[in-house]
Image 1: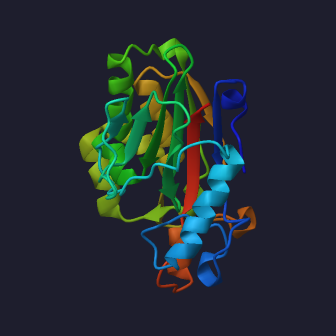
Image 2 (image 1 turned 60 degrees about the vertical axis):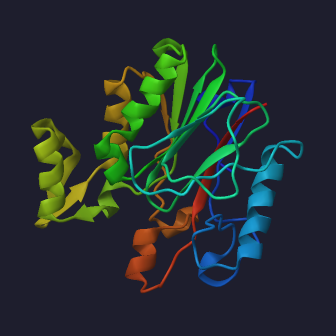
Length: 253
């Protein structure tokens, strides 16, 4: 489990960014695959989720997960929230409820954990390029502000994700970002006629744009096999039909 030094200072919460080690899954899902949407055996995934929950707290509720769809949608869980068996389609979770671990799943996309230490509100964001360009980060922060959070009290931890040196993209991808804002050209580089995109820097820029200044960037590349994370892009290059998902989690104690 990888932790954020900035979030570790906050004693009212627990959190962690997990790689693929320490689970029960086999084969291409070895071993801590937390993706219920993967083709892994569901009983193994549930065992893995229990392992993660117990690492955080054996006395907490079950981990709350969403059905991620690369959108700008989020859900807010308060005391009146009605839990359902079916996972809600969204890409971020915000809550002020204690002992409720919230988490997002990634396999190259960016996991972001947020905490306001005065209002005691947490958030977990799944920021792929689609969600990031659609404004998922802004939407979550706006809601936190509406709930009384202040920029000076919010800490953001940006977890392991694909590094720019391994994120090659096509020209039409770049055009989408330039159409949104010409200044986005700074997040692209060209090496040997190949275009590369810096997703973690774009996410950090979005956080700063939305007035968040206390940011902890983990700068760990999920594509690099040595780091032991699941990677969708690496799986694709290896001709695998599917891939496991890493989990990033946060909870108010």
